[in-house]
Every structure is written in structure tokens, then in C-alpha cells.
Length: 308
Length: 253
Ligand SMILES: Nc1ncnc2c1ncn2[C@@H]1O[C@H](COP(=O)(O)OP(=O)(O)OP(=O)(O)O)[C@@H](O)[C@H]1O
Ligand SMILES: [Mg+2]
Image (cartoon, rainbow over all chains, first blue to last red; front, side, top):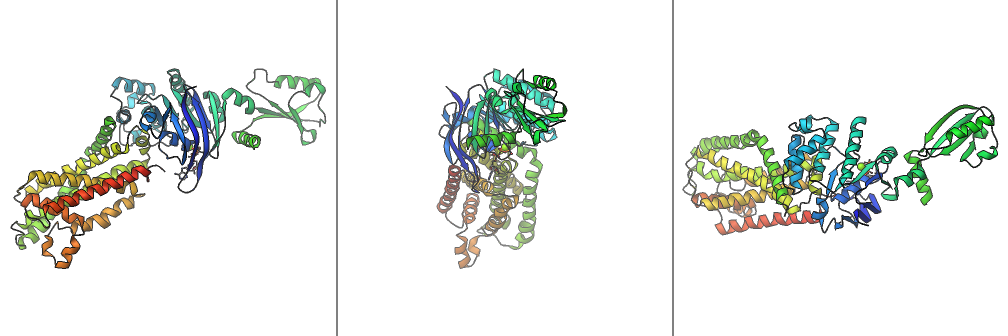
């Protein structure tokens, strides 16, 4: 298997002694969309920065399409486009200038047609002569995306691309990411949100406290972790379950006043309707009900619980 | 070699210069004029010729050096400090660009700018005094090497600084005194013996002396010594920069 990115035993201890990455191993396949999922401070940005050559690793290795990112940094870096988390731009440059600058910086010959097409796709063409400081946050984000794509990279890193982006733009962004994937670009994005990873990614890596604690195809992960719970408040306490409900994932809590049914929301037949019908058959009446999905934190707790 | 990358940085820096061309030129030209009014005309008229050169003409090389030193340092230090400060340096560091190429871009642009300003100051001085340049090639040699050396120094300061105060600190506390005491406005032979010896520890003395020699063939130290000293200083700066890049000091945390 050829990997787009292959990270081996990567560790990073910052000068202040903080261990931001702790023996990370990670392979990203060519052409996939990979989501790096983790809470604030997990080390997502540090990992990306180390792969891209912005942060010096304390130990370990990174290969980009087979090129070591230290000894063959030119080859490694020329394949990568990076959209940073922070909106860092040259405020006084115009959109067209800053995007052309990026292409040149990566050593690529001028290609006005490509840049024009890129800016049009990102709805920036009519702003091409505007200074970046006069753009809105969402537009600045798109300028950064244009800069990252200006040199036609094979691998695109998006560090929290949807922070501060409205629903519509988010949708069009995902659409563009999928189009990029169709042209063979590998995309690695970070996010705090399970839903986002779920919507976009082929595979998901979960990072916590500088460790990648799991990488899994989205399908497997959602099956494992994306469970939903239906909580039913009962009129009368129920001490034991009727026999043909015993094979379902139901627990009785608060002295029989509540039933908690755990199910998989991704399944076509998730069992919620038939459970409610059966309860009615048995004459168990519900006062109220609500559903809840395990939050990212719950998932981490579960994962950490599993692995320890 | 990623020459396109180098030229991208160079052009970026130069366009930053030209965007503020008025400010870039106004201050050095104005201060040159002030120096001429104060030192050249007001005080200079009471000072006898130095080494057979009128005092007004005598201070021209020193004045150019003064401008070029501070311009080189401030251009180069700001050029690299600002992307560090704003965060846009991420792009430089993630590009397929060696550190040498990065330096070529930044220092090249800073040196070009201060060279231009140096020549403009020279032209301005031409309005006030009769100039003669006996060794134009040597003049350009000293001007160029000084611009490059001090742009390198500025680059080092821009990487070392972790705040705008520090960016100002070295130029203010070190460079300004050294240039004023570096024989810009006097020949160090006018000083008492002990101060002459102390002056020889000041690297700026060698620059000004060599530069002035290229104009008038009069100098405080011999040409060979001047050339050697400036090359030593140049190598020192290159050495420090090589070390910075090897260790990633203040660039990659
Ligand atoms: N330059 C630095 N010096 C010291 N510690 C740092 C530095 N940069 C980051 N850290 C620390 O490393 C940890 C990981 O930071 P990182 O930015 O990689 O997290 P993240 O997963 O991207 O978080 P977020 O979701 O908030 O963006 C944090 O605890 C942070 O405080
Ligand atoms: Mg981050």
C-alpha cells in the first residue's frame, strides 16, 4: 500500500517542556479524506505543523508520498498545501497577488488560467483586486484555501476549516473537498465535531493528549461509537423487562422509572418504532421521552476506558 | 535551487518598500539635509579642512554609512520579524525552500533597498558640496558589502526579537552609538591617543574609513585592514545565520 502520509513514532516536546505529541503513528492512504478528531489542545495542529515542516519534531519520522520530510524536504513539501487554523494573511496584499505569490514560492511556473479558475471556484474572482484586510472572515478562509491550492498540491491539510464559517459556505466547502478528492487529492482535515468527521471523512483518527488512540474507517467507528440513547420516562415503575425485549439493549434505571434504549442511528431499522409498539402492547405507558447522542467527550471516555 | 521562491520573496519585499516609497525616502533625505545644515554649514564653516577635504565633503561618506547601516538593519529585521509576528511565516516554512533561499530573498531585498537609499543620500549630498569619488568601484564595493552585512545582522535581530521593543533595542543601544563614534563626523586621528585605541574596537570605524578612502583617499586605517574587517564581519553574520537555520532557533518551536 502506498501512503500519502506515513508518520512513525512522532513525538514533540515544546521548549516549555510540554509533551504535545507522544509517539504518534499514523498512515493516511492516497486519495482518501481523513479526519483528525480531537478536543482542544489534543495536538492536532502540532501534528499537522510537524508534518508540514513548521514544527521541529523531538523524535520520529514523517514520510510524504515516500519522501522523508527532513532529508528530502523539498520533494516532501512540494506535494503539500496547508490551510492553517488561524486566519494569518498579509493584510495589505490583494487576493490575486497573495495567491500568485504562494504558487511562486512553491517554485511553480506562472499559470494565470489555473489561478483564475481556482479563484472563480472559491467565489473570489470578483474580489481579486481587493486587499485582504477588507474581506470578511469567511472570505479570508477561502483566500487561505486558494493559497494552499495555488501550487496544485497532491495532499491538502485543512486545520479546522469550518471554524467561523456559515452553513452555506460549509456545504460548498465540503462540495469542493469532494471534487478535489475526485481529482486524486488526499485531504486531511481536523475537527472537534464528530458530525463533521462523519459527514466528510472516509477514515477518522482520534487524537487525545498527543496520542492517536484510534484510526478506523468511518463506518466501523460510527458502528462502535455513534450510538444514540432513547430515554423513556414511565408512569409506573417497571422492574423486569418482558421476555421478547430482553434481546434489545435496554437498561432499567432510577428504580424502574426510566428505560434507556441504546441503538444505532445509522441503521435503517434502528428498532425505536418497534420498541415503542411492543411497549404499548405490554401496556407500559410513557410520560415523556428524549434521545441523546454520545458526545465526543463520552466517546473519549469510552475509548480511554477501553484502552486502559 | 528554488529560484522562483527566492524571487517571490524578493518581489514581495520590494513591493512592500514601493508601497511606502514616500516614507522610505523622506526620512533619510530629510535627515541628510538636516545634518548638512547643522554640521556642514553651521558648525562646519568653523572647522578647518580635514586631510585636505572641506568638512562638508568630509562627512558625506560617514553620513551615507550612517543611513545605510540603520536602513539595512531596520529593513531586514522588520522584513522577517513581521511574518513571524503575524504568523504568515507558516507559508515560508512549509514551502520547498531552503533557508539559504529564504535569506537570499529577504536580505537581498533589504540590501537593495538600503543601497538605493544610500545612493539617493549621495545624490542629495551632491546638492550641498562638490563631491569627488576617486575610486568608484571601491566605493560600490564598500557600499554593497555594508548593505549585505548589515541586512544579515538585521535578519538575525528580526529572528531573535520576540517583541517590537527588542526590534528597536539593538539599533538604538548598539548601532547608533557605534556609528556616531565610528568617525562619521570626525577623523579618529583628532581624538586623544587612548580614545583612538578604543575606537579601533568599533567595527564601524573600519567601514567608514574604507568608504571615505574610496572618495578622498584619506583614511584612518589602511584599506587592507578595512576590507579584512568588513569581510570578517560578513562571515560572522553568515556563521550566526547558518547556526540559526541549523537549529531552527526561534523559527521552528
Ligand atoms: N509553541 C508552543 N509552545 C508550548 N506549548 C504549545 C505550543 N503550541 C502548542 N502548545 C501546546 O500543545 C498542545 C497541543 O496544541 P495544538 O495546537 O496542537 O492542539 P489542537 O489539537 O490543535 O487544539 P485546538 O483544537 O484547540 O486547535 C496544547 O496544550 C498547547 O498548549
Ligand atoms: Mg489546532
